[in-house]
Image (cartoon, rainbow, N blue to C red; front, side, top):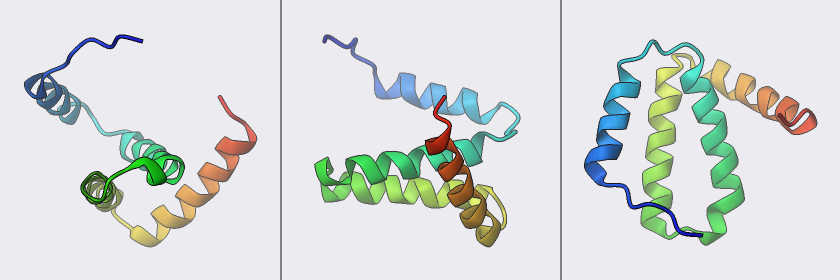
Amino acid sequence: MNRPYITVETILELFRSTADEPPGAAPAGSLLWLADFLAREHATMNADDWDALVHVGAQLWRAQGSTRDVGWGAENAMRGKKRNPA
């Protein structure tokens, strides 16, 4: 499958424009997605990719405010997601 090339500048612009949007539930949803992705793909990643994505996850975790609540809520939400896939 051919995927179109995307530049770093395009991705940074996407980050910027997304950051300008009201947060809503985006950090929590992104945190859950990232945790699920890392759990699935950790064996295929090199150490640098793993470390970078863990740092991204840490920033999302901080964006949630209360780390204790995020961990509990994220774990429960992920369980619900697996029972009821969209």
